[in-house]
Length: 410
Image (cartoon, rainbow, N blue to C red):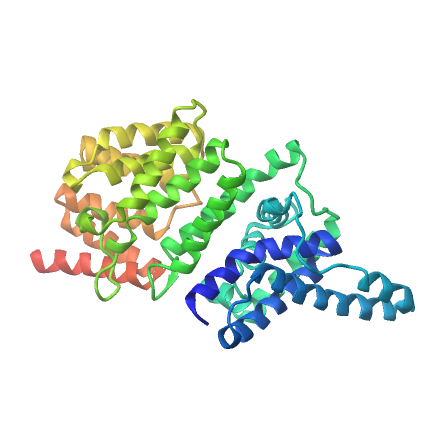
């Protein structure tokens, strides 16, 4: 299918699903109907062209599927005649629904219902709101398609059993679930920007989808500082992607990247977002991470990086969140300011944290700091340990190459 049409389908998915769920009330059946409509569009549009009203076309096709579903269900319950009249009375065409523009946000909140686990919420969000197929989601997370289909099916059943209606949550519910919504988008972006497994460093479809969804949330909640902070963080981080891999897909570290390849438009937009947000006074974790990314992006050369400012921002972030990766990054910043010995000392506390002890990144950072400190044997051991533990092939190759370079120079 042409990329333009594929992008359009993904953009329209939450609006179409929202319209169908609002009319019929059954999230699971509506989601299945919309997926069938998307398949029909993917088959028909390349041959006959995109219709003048693609959203209305998709809604009509999905509504027909829902009508068939209702007829079958109501016939089974021996109330076919009445049900047929009710189903046929439903207008499947587009309407001037005053809250239709809120559909993506409502769907995000539904997909991040507290009853769902994070993996289920991510999978359901990618399918219901992102428009990805089950096969695409399964490939992204390296599980069989049947396994992912079961996960999504269970998630939809959980949503159905919860009895949640297709309405914007109350202020209290929205405040309770917004953190989950942002966290799911953050996880989707991270998996796309730095895939944890497989042959590719990036999954551009995932990171791009996370940015698109974050834009949608920001458009609907423009005054929320953490929503703006998350979008800024994504833009400022993704701006470096063109320089993050070499011609053969090999990983290039931040200090070795060709910064002329960075996306300056994304950097300008991200800096403007975070600057406006920080001026409001209420500072959250995503805003601090975006501010750190902005400091990196503003440095014309790696040597020009304002590491004291980054270390100070990570210190603030540490007070705000109990995340071992924040402690790890703070140790790196401290090493850049005070020397590798300081960083290595700060890393010792992570050996007692089960969430990261034995993680390949801890060994990789230790290898880097030992290399900077002039301890090649220790650096070599940690690089090899990290390479053995990572499931990302580009990261493994990078670490093996670092170890090989040390061996050649010894």
